[in-house]
Every structure is written in C-alpha cells, then in structure tokens.
Amino acid sequence: MNSVSQPSRLLVGRYHLEHVLGRGGMGVVYRARDLLHEQFGEPRSNVALKLLGESISQCADAHVLLYGEFALARGLRHDRVIRMFSFEVDTHSQIAFFTMELLQGVTLDRLLLECSSGLPWRELQPIALQLLDALAYTHQKNVVHGDVKPANVMVGDEGVRLFDFGLGHAQSQAAVGLPSVSRSRFNAWTPAYAAPELLAGGALTTAADVYGVACILYELAHGKRIGERTSTGRLLRPVQLPRHCWPALRSALAIDPEHRRITVAELREVIGCSRPRWYL
Image 1 (cartoon, rainbow, N blue to C red):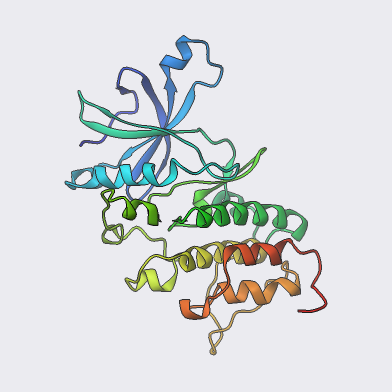
Image 2 (spheres, rainbow, N blue to C red; image 1 turned 90 degrees about the vertical axis):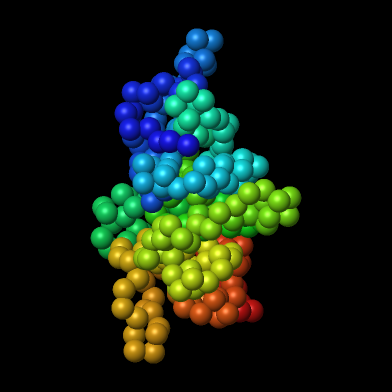
C-alpha cells in the first residue's frame, strides 16, 4: 500500500482531500469532503481521513497496522470517543485509509500552552471527568488506548473527545485471530506521557493508560509537565489540585506499574467527589 503525497487527491472517486489536520509517528489525517454525501444534500459531508505516512507506508505490513487501529475503535460507542466510519482501499493508487468523524475544537496540548499556571479547578474538573469517562469506557470494552496524551484529546463546544487509537490494543482482536503488528518497533511513544514500562519495552496494559491520563491531569493542574522528582522519587502536589485528590493521582503516577494499583474508574470517582469522604 502507498501513501498520499498531494492533498488534492481523490480517493475511491468519493473523498476529496482538502488539507492536513495532523501528522503523527505513523499516519497523516486529512480533512476531506465526502462527495457522495454532498450529492445527496447531506449538510455534514466533511470527514477526517487517515492514511499511512510516507515513511511507514514502505513497511510491508504497515496496512495491517492501519486496519488494526480501525478495527480497534470501530466498536466503541461513547459520546467522548471518536466515531469510526469505514475502512477502504483505493485500488488505482493502492492507498489504504479509513474515515472517521471530523472533530471540532482545539487539542489539549494547544490549550495547555495558554495555561502556564494550570487550570482553575472549576475548569479542570469537567475536562478531567469527561476524559476519564472516555478512558474508563474503553477499558470496560477491553480496549487499551496506548497513547494517552494531550495531542490526542480534543476540547470543543461539545466537550472532550478522545481519539487516535493507533498504538492501542484490544483483547478481542487477539481472541478472534485478527492480524496484528508490534507497535513498539516504530518507537512512536511520547516519552513525556508514556508509562516507564513501555519505554523499557514492557507490555501495554491498562496501567499504562492510567499513567498517561495521570500525567495529563498533573499538567492541567500544574501548568507544566512532570519534571524532576524529588530524591525519593516523590512529586509535589499541584496547587490547583484539591488535597483529597492528590493521593489517588500520586498513585496513578507511580513509576512501578506494580504500585500503580488504581484504575481509571477509581481515579474518576475521586476526581468527581466534591469533598473527601469522612471514612477515607
């Protein structure tokens, strides 16, 4: 399978690529017009279209990776998770791609650039809860996102949306024998948000997602990424974070996954609690 070098290409006689929305370690996402839907008067005829980047498209099994991402996320149905539409191949150009909903808003990494001191709790809490809702749902469906970071979270008028499952894993895929490929060999992890065990070559588990989302929450409350820890490996509580939330977040940020025992759902319960419970 090949990649697209010109954004004006027409794929399968239906999708007209307009411009690049984003580039990642393995793929390129375009804004595209669905000409078929336009012809029938569909008011929302724009989609997001993802295909392989030029470098990775040269790998013989790269298209398997692309289909794996689509298959991973197509069964997810949640207001805070991006919706997949279809996986297709343009036979003329031998380009594989999939379409998904076009998200509106700004990615969380860009929002953080404007918040050097962190977000006030009244603004932070709703974002945190919606993101944790999305991740808790994916884990309930036995899907691990694998790349939880601000650049993969959209914030818009309709709230938070989690997207880009390109480094994810689903137990159901392995169970039914769907083809898969090792993501780790592409060295696509983002060090600032990747769990230490992933960077060390360990297995991808829900604990890695817990660490990634905890890094985001810490940054939202502190205004900066996790930097140097104290000599004992401890972190200081961000000023914007309520005291009763800190033990749970600190647990989620444990370097050793064996000590990272809290789940996303449990972290969500703590973040959503307005005050500490008397029996804790």
